[in-house]
Length: 130
Image (tube, rainbow, N blue to C red; front, side, top):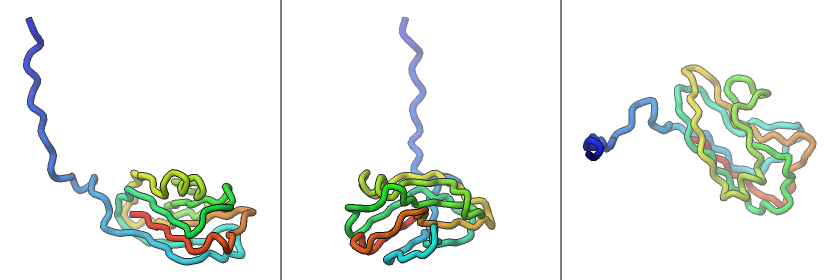
C-alpha cells in the first residue's frame, strides 16, 4: 500500500507577462551634494515590475547609517521601499524587490539624508532599480 504516484512536475520555461522583470531601469551615477534632506536621484512613469535594487559607492566607510534609499510611487514623502544605504552596501550592495508599478504611476528613487550629510570621501554613488 503505497501512496499513489505523484503527477509529473511541469517545468515553466517562460514567465507570464506580469512576472517578467521590467526592461526599464532607473539609474543614477554621481556624487550627491544635497543641500536638502532628500534628493530625487531618478524618476519615471510606467507599467513596470521592479525586481532588483543595486547600489555601489567608492568608499562606504564612514557613511552615516541614517542615509537611506527610498523607492516611492507618486508621493515622494511616502516610501514604498526604504533601505539603509550602509546596510545595503554591507550586504553586498544588492537586494531583491517585487514591486508592481501601476500604469501611469510615477516611480521615484530618492536618497534620503535627514540630518546626515554625504561625505566627500564616499565619492561617487551608483544606484540602479530594474
